[in-house]
Length: 315
Ligand code: BTN
Image 1 (cartoon, rainbow, N blue to C red):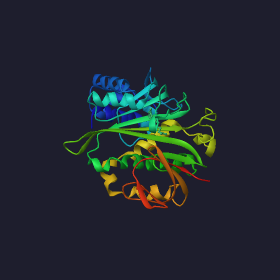
Image 2: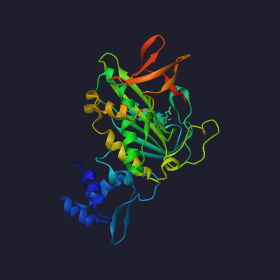
Image 3: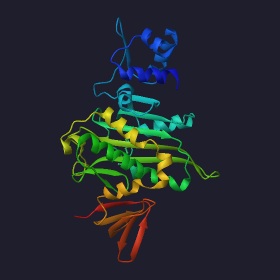
Image 4: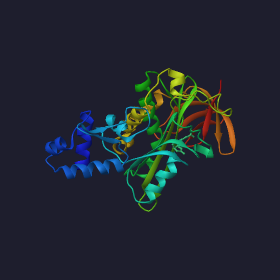
């Protein structure tokens, strides 16, 4: 473990701890402690230094901060916490192009937040969690389409555990509560075609946490965790819970066990749906989700498997 990680661990244990005490506990010089704290601050950890008391890992308020996320996170990560950005997915892509292997980008607001199928993602300041996870999972290209459904399960379970109410997943990437959309996921990837592997993946997760008012064009179907469950949850705790649930994705995704939860949480299986596929649309009954996370539908022409597209649930 690097010194900065050990220091972070100690900071998480106590409210204040002096440089001298840290140096003693970790068998290093005070100067090394100071340098490691500087590095952590550069990575976005909010660490204050108070005379006669020592260092303190901040982040109890709900402003997004790496320190507050790390209080509940299972392992260290590189965070980029931004006040404003065009899209966290774009920022993460630039990090990938610059050669980063892993990073988490979170913004208080996005000016050009994007959803699937070229849609905008409404990202008002301070009300939501707009997070992109950059990773380079060592998985074969065939498993890559499962990343979105894996993330949907990780995110839905994190929301459930914090707000005490139950989310549903609308194939393929939306999380709902009480029939309203709380969250969307946009996964973007680059592949190494020759090696048949994934180069990098950017998993963008947008969650309405506290918002109550939504623009006219989405107000009939969008809502927030607070509005639907009554729970005011911390965005930092939510980010940590999602990141913890995402850990181990590379090993677990191929086992496909998580798909059982995905099916249990599905709000489309057994429902009449309208399928939008490219420029066409047709009516069907959603009957299952297969082991490739494809939606299985029954139509007048027989059973079809949908790997992409979108469905709306018919009332
Ligand atoms: C959808 O609803 O179709 C997907 C929405 C994904 C939104 C998230 S917010 C963080 C990341 N940055 C973006 O621009 N989009 C994703």
